[in-house]
Length: 189
Image (tube, one colour):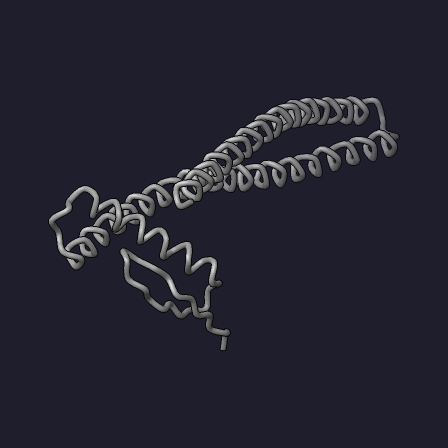
C-alpha cells in the first residue's frame, strides 16, 4: 500500500486538509489551481455565495477538462494515423521483399538450368538446334525476370520513400503533441 501524504491548503479563504498518495507539492499545486479559479469566479460575480462560486468553478474546471481531453484525443488520432499508414507500408514492403526473393530464386534457378543445359549439350546438329531454341527461350525468360527484378527494385525504392514520409509525419505529429503538452503544462502553472 502506498504511503499517504497530508497537506493543509487554503482555498477561497478556508483551510482544508488534503490526504493522498501524490506528493505534497502536487496537492498544493491542485489546491492553488482550484483557489485561482474560485477567485476568478468570485471576482466576476461578487454577489454569489461560496457554494455558488464552488459550483461555477467546478463547471469552469469541467469545461477546461473536457476541451483539453477532446483536444488530446484529436491529437492522439492524428498521431495514430501516420503510425497505421507506416504499418501498412511496412506490410507492403514485406510483401514486396518476399515477392522479390521468390523472383530472385526463380531467376537463379533459371540461370542454373541454363548453365546445366549448356554443359550437357552434346547432341547432333538437329538436337543442338533444338537445344539452342530452348536456350533462347531461357534467355527471354531471363530477360523478363531481369525486367521484373528492375520493376520490383523500383517499387521497393518507392515503398522506402513512403515509409520515410510516414516516419516524417509521425515525427511532426509527435512534435505537435509535445508542444501541446508543454503549452498545457504552462497553463497549469
